[in-house]
Length: 79
Image (cartoon, rainbow, N blue to C red):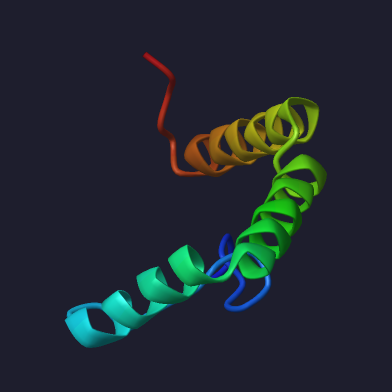
C-alpha cells in the first residue's frame, strides 16, 4: 500500500489493527475540507502519472516477456 498511498500526500495511512488511529484519520478527513481536496488532487495526479493505461500495458508486456525468458531458461514451455 505504501507505494500507492503516500502518507499525508495522497492519503492517510494508519497501522493495521489500530482502530483508534483509523478513527482519527476518518475524523480528520471528515472535518477538514482542505485536507480532503489536497489529498484527492494529489492522489489523482499520482494515479494519472504512474498508472495510465499505456504505462501499465508496457509494464505488463515487459513482465510477461521477462517471465517467458526466465521460464525458457528453466525448460518450461507455455501451455
